[in-house]
Length: 317
Image (cartoon, rainbow, N blue to C red; front, side, top):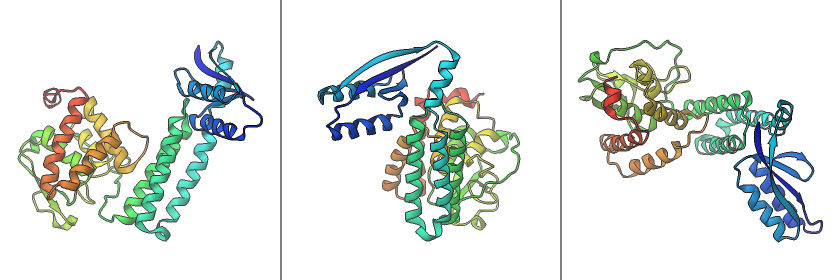
């Protein structure tokens, strides 16, 4: 029913260094312990072969074998060996405590603490081979913490509203002026790209330092009181995507997942960190917000193309 790789080992009793190194490697790999000296990982994992080689080089015994589970009872037993619920529970407790420390730490140290917790979540997720509700709960707690961090030290960040989204007609949003906060980052840059490429090709953008500075006829996005901003657990990009019926485009949805993760956290997205790195490089060199958006447009175009959806299909959908 389910294939596993198993490592059967016996370590040299007098070599404490190799014992500690192997124990850490097995722990970091997320191995399940079937019994003393028998460690499991899902089929295809390569780390066990490396550990086997290291043990043999140190004079110990190690053998890698394939293990085939044949019954539901066996599978249920093995799944318990990989249960990360307690680890997620401990992490959620740390996440909740982190919020109470924001004021004491200040913005820089608080952001560092949140990044450390995000790395811990990413590491735990990578070894969660049979994810359950605990992972979703931890992801939600992490998203909430990032949102709280934004609100604590970036007062311009929008507070999520609870309103219902309504379908909108793109023909009523043509040749418009769109306003958002100056010094844009991932969500605002991605949303501006989405507007320009899929909603209003003639869109013009104005960058404002406060919501009250929005020009009277401009359509606002990604600030409190804007027509398009965070709603419940959706970031502005996702709100615009759904409002204009573009959420069925798999390439746009994939970009939306990356933007969501980078803006408010949650379940890690493989391409998100790469997107963030490239945009950060663009931001360092751009002279002004218009130049930043111009360069970011090219980046998002490339990501969209890489996801395999021609622009024309989404525009004509």
